[in-house]
Length: 366
Picture 1 (tube, rainbow, N blue to C red):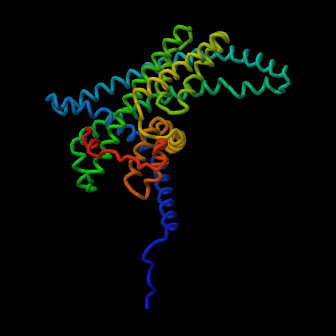
Picture 2: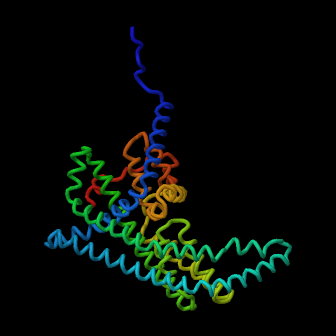
Picture 3: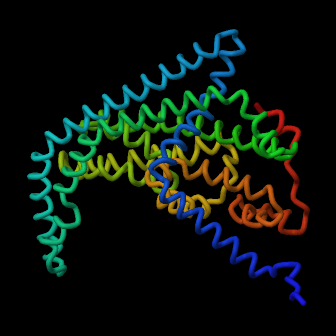
């Protein structure tokens, strides 16, 4: 007589299997990161540019012409950023020997002051902590990899064009492949709308941050203000730590190039710009944003940065928002989505039932 197999699997066993499957997926994504990173960039750029494609189609423009316009604009923007950044980096590389002499003099003086306060070995430790040679090697690596970065940009542009070619037939394909319900379509529409809105507002606030940084550094006479403005534009997309990282290079350069008073003015300017734009203007325009808790944003920054590198940090917030909406679709994973979401309102803590989003309104979003 054959032994009977268990009809149901225990909860701990299911949990172990799910964790093992997740670990395998994460390892597979980590191994495929060189391929997935350009595709992810292309997907998010396509999400942002889809409204422009639909608008031109509604105006009666042929699809091939609309795709050509979008591709031309994206290529021009990328080429302009590449020309400005490479030119500024080359000028910075040529000026590094002058900055290195000034830096070693300042480090010698600061180390002597620290040793006078009883901290021995400071003269040797400070140049090791801030080594200008590492900065020079990093700049050389960036300039030497400019051609490969340009090739990756062209690959991303081609992927964007191919995605936009399929965007009109994608909903029907999803219905045929997965049999999506009305609630599933509503969640997908809500996700696409939230990502488009987030990326658009983040781009505008990053442009405002870069412009303010450039004007402030130009007024103070800091070298390569355009380079630091470009750095501020890109780092403003990185949550939590981006606003801190963008201030470090120009502050150190101001210390080497000018005096202590100007250095303090540079630092205060960055603090004021980030407080006004990041903590006042951006929350007012964005409202609730993508509905992610601050702790979840920080953990997501570490996780996606480890998994996908710099692009993962750049896309940490929209990727986490997509993950939360995917977790909301199943009752087994909905508790995780709640933990990653925004704080619970006081009335909900008192026992009031949370409000359910209106699927009909989300479904109407294009």
